[in-house]
Length: 224
Image (cartoon, rainbow, N blue to C red; front, side, top):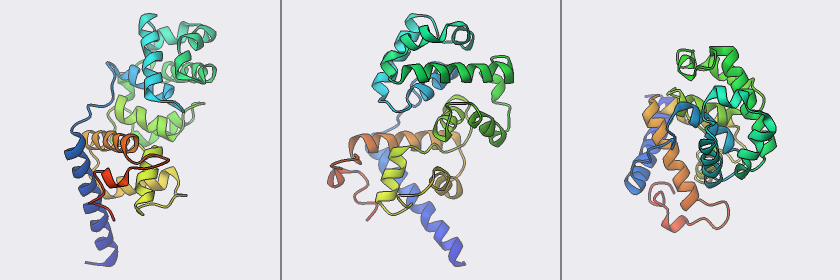
C-alpha cells in the first residue's frame, strides 16, 4: 500500500470512529426538523447568522400566516414577509433572499421542489450558488436535507471541531473542509445527514467557541 492510500485509510477510519463516538453519545438526531422540503429551504435561509430557536419562531409565524409554499412566498409583499420572519434577525435581507430563491424555483421548475431532485447535483449546486443570498452552506443544506443529495454540509461547528483536532487548518476554505468528508467517506445521504447533525450537537454542547468543554466531550478519547 502506498503512502497516499495509507493516509486516506487513516483519515477514513478516524472519521468513522468520530461518527460512531458521537452517535453512541447523542443517538439519532432526526434532522432536518421540518414537515416538507420547502420548509427545509425556508429554514436553511432563515438560519443564516442566527440561532435555530429564532428560526423556529419565524417559521411558526409563517405557519400561522399560511405562508409555507413557494406560491405564497412569491405573492406576499416583501415588506410583509420581513415582518413575519422578524424573529430570525436580519429580516429585511432574509425576506429578499427568500424571494430570490422562489423566483429561481419558478424559473427553473415552475415552483416544484420535487422536480429539482432530478437535476445533476453539481449543476444544481452551481445554479443555487448563483442565487443572490445563497452561499455554499445554505446551498448544500438545501441539496442534502430538502433534495436528498449526498453532499456534506460544512458549518462553523465543523470547521471548529476538526481544526481544533488538527484534521483541517483553521484557515481551510469551505471546499477544503468539505473535501475531507467527500473524499474519505461513502457518499450516502442518510449518513451525511446524521453526521452533520451530530457535529452540530457536539459544537453546541461541548466544542464551544469560548470555554470549550474538552474534558467532557465524547471525542476526548478519540482524537488527541
